[in-house]
Amino acid sequence: MPDAFKEIASNYHARTPYHPVFFERLARALDLQPDSRLLDAGCGRAELAKGFSPHAGEVVAIDKSEDMLTAARRNAPENVVFRIGEVGKCEVGTFDAISVGRALRYMPREPTVKYFESVLPKGGAVVTCTAV
Image (cartoon, rainbow, N blue to C red; front, side, top):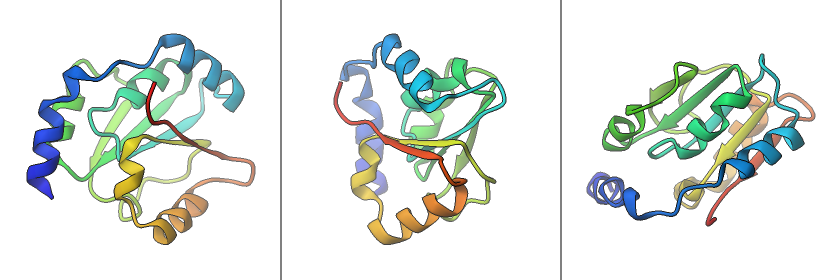
């Protein structure tokens, strides 16, 4: 699978970016605050992490592909923290919200749901984002 992620990482430039209004509206709906923590699970090139970064105090972006994270680190705001590893196997604390994009399809369902439940307080939200 690593070769597949390397190819995907090199083709991200062709994707339509998320519109800034998308992040503003979703951040408001999630009630993100300057002290909020958001997890971007399977972050890829961290488009979601970077988009949510102005609306949260800290965004933790996790991906198991070093190629994805190398690309993600470019132009990343200071409040975005990167971790290499599989979602569910990284010790990263608790969060007010979780965003996950197209990587959700690669994550094993039951362990992923259990992990999300373990890092979200009651009332926390998981937002899945696919196509624009």
